[in-house]
Picture 1 (cartoon, helix red, strand yellow):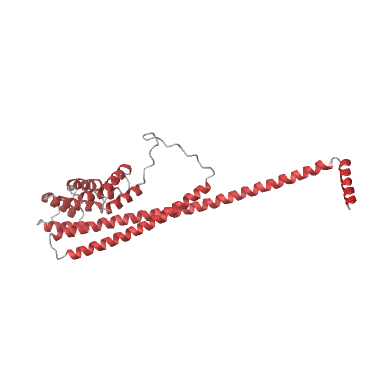
Picture 2: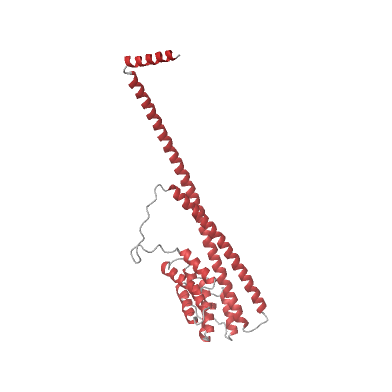
Length: 306
């Protein structure tokens, strides 16, 4: 057997020697086959990359849409919470002012205050849930963006304080508004005032500007020794949003309440009459009439603003 193997090898070697062109031809064919296989593999990788990019793009679009929905829901809940809180607080203040020492209705007022607290807690819980969903969607979207990113940019050196670009981007209008409202409801008046002032500086034309200006007046109204400033704050609301049918009658009524607390009865009567004249169908008009009756003044309408 070993002799036969040697003979076969010898015959192959002899054949290669006698036909010198056969070996290069075979090598060339193998090289061509290898190049064809490599080209096919590269084409398959290209198609796989295109398919992966398309799927990631579709996923990112869906996540972005879900995040936008969560943002709109968050904004709606914030607006609803602010509106309900302001309306109920105004009602409770009016009721307490009308009591004027009458203790028989104190239990009913306390019960109403408890119901208001429960409602505020429910709204806050809903807001927390929406914020959590928004955070989860944001994290998922960021992960998708990181997966798609081909190259990670090298870290940049931190700019020294005062240098151009050292400060980060300002917070969004919605973030500032939400933070200010939360701090106001939590009794952190000074912190809320600074956030609302920053909001008006950065976003004076935002849709929540009127609520922010009213909230500033409301905070000053409830702070000791700040009633004069509250009157000025409510005057700003009245001047800037004179045609608004919701925020302006509230500002006029609260201005009257501040003037009444300052013992400026004549000015308070004028403010209450302005509510009745300018917004006769508003809830504040009815409350203004009640204040006028309690002060022994008639509710004859004063001339409205032009």
